[in-house]
Image 1 (cartoon, rainbow, N blue to C red):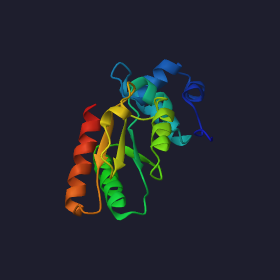
Image 2: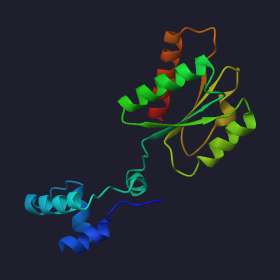
Image 3: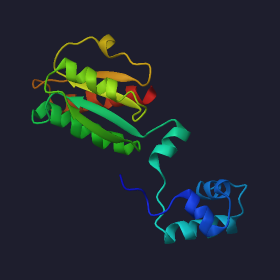
Length: 171
């Protein structure tokens, strides 16, 4: 995995300020003078500094990512749901990570277990089956079960998808 061109530690060395000061300046903390913030931000921009999303997620205890598990992306009702979930999630500043279960409950549960590493804020399991939400209970993040099928209109699928997303975001 390739990292950004420069780290906070390297920015500290380049600017002559402590790592703590660099971090505070990049995060617009007001205890750092405007001049110092501008100097550090200029150096960061010159060196293509990109914040480490994993470090930010740890600090904020929020990843900005929602996983969506669908049985199969090629089925129209699931692709409509996935499309609407992504558009809605982006409007809230979230991104979607999408997985296919290929109609396997075992695969769904395996995905949920593997995502329990703190890499996401919630999961939406899309299914046409009448499943119990209890089988997906997880202490690390909310898991929402979204029932959609081919007999539903696109508008109904969109409404159900939006409601599921809101439920996950509420936690």
